[in-house]
Length: 157
Image 1 (cartoon, rainbow, N blue to C red):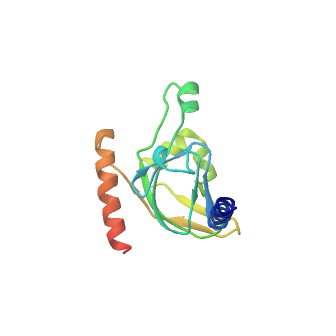
Image 2: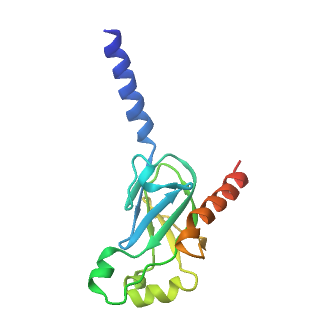
Image 3: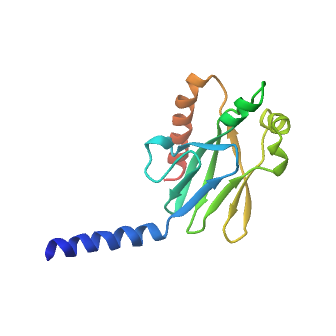
């Protein structure tokens, strides 16, 4: 009976613990790459299209573009990684771009400058996010993302 009670307690703890987690989702053509410098593929409850996050402050890295762009467009476009800080509470959040970015040429124009990113919370609140674009080559991205995360972590301790 004790084993059953421990299992039940663990189940209740998991359910209660995940009740306060928020779902982070993304607009079409937006993909999550990193959360607090961890590759999304290495995180539980996360994929390139959504993540379940406990309340707190996170540094996330997203990229605009997808395989459909490559299939249907002889001149596809993928943005450089975009880093931003997002505050998560119990509300679900959708990370979105202005609707005009659905056009690849318009998106390219804005991503080659400074794109606008918004966090839309499940209660209707919407905040514009500050974005830092990661420059350099693909080989340099991981190093730059790790360095930026170390600064983020130090400033939030």
